[in-house]
Length: 285
Ligand code: PHE
Image (cartoon, rainbow, N blue to C red):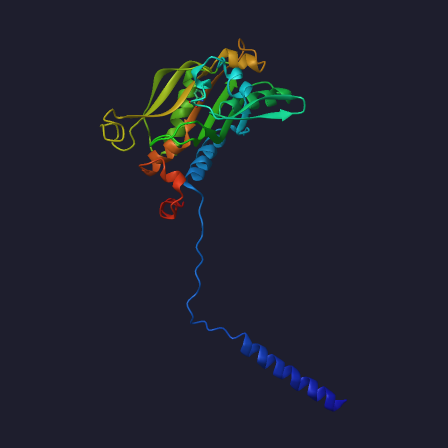
């Protein structure tokens, strides 16, 4: 028994010595570095913008990218004969047969249908305004050139309450744009037309490149258009059953790529979609 114990002990010592030898690490070897990825600049922009609005108290909502005509058009006061409905702008997808019924479906052309969906859901849950929502997402238009891509991103923002006015709209815009660009930006509202807002305004910011002096980017005007906005049309509120006499609201929709290009000095929209790693690395965080 003593001999056996002695054997066992010496085997254990030997095994340990072998293990130590096998596990020896040359700490002088250079380490293997790993490359880390980063969020796409468009996703970074979406996250940043959504965060600014949620800090202001807007609730985040999302809607489907494949929409029906009711949410994308009818409920937004866009009648069937409106030019935005022409095939030129809208990608229709094959009719979905859901049970017995089927209806034309399309890729949403803007994030405004989320206004309708969010308001309906809110009312169905038994709430009453105030309601303040930010809705980021992808949108699609049959359009492709230097400044247009068939898929791009928007952030939709709206608020419904008693006595909401253009002044609230302007205040929220000014705060958002100054926070996003990390400096005081001038804004200018120009009268415009959207079927789902009345009055409507396009919003320009003082050129962030030349500080309003006039340059190539702002085409010498000192101003750059960044978004569409307005007071929610009473017909839109009525389409979801909100009393348009008692409540009013503002809404706006901004182009995400546009703002990211301005903030980061990106010269060409197509860089976002070519997935050239040199560009993505440079933009990574
Ligand atoms: N939906 C509009 C567009 O895509 C933008 C917009 C949103 C305008 C909300 C007014 C109010 O062009």
